[in-house]
Length: 166
Image (cartoon, rainbow, N blue to C red; front, side, top):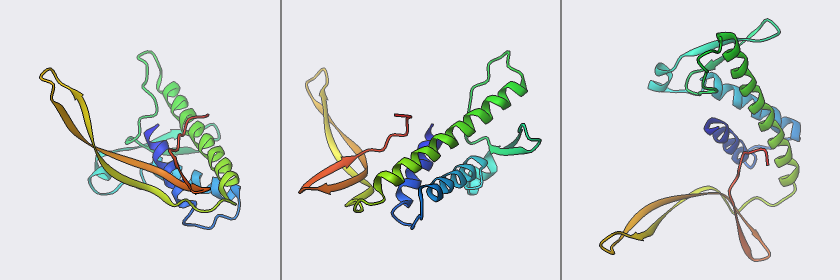
């Protein structure tokens, strides 16, 4: 889920950097980036050395290489390697389809809208916590990341992208 969210957020930010010609081209770009991220192609340095690449056979006689830096499923003790492989590929392709659908919907929703005022921006805040037993309040440093801030009719609209199916 974390890998999926990371790739989706990256793509939604790229939407404003590149000139995608259609919802289909934006969707295909997501699929390309999802595969690269999952296959370990984007890993660098020590991370690239730490993780392995596993080949998963597909129904069409080919195989897909996925890196162990992403945990797709937690195998049950009684599951065979074939069952785990099938489940892993199902999760990989399921997220690929969901992401492609999200990209198409996003493209069609935002292609004619003005660019956001702020995209993927982090702000640091200090928040005062609840009092402890001695009545003292501890201050906490918090980092808030806005996915996008839009301006509409003189008001700012803060959005946080969610990648669930809703």
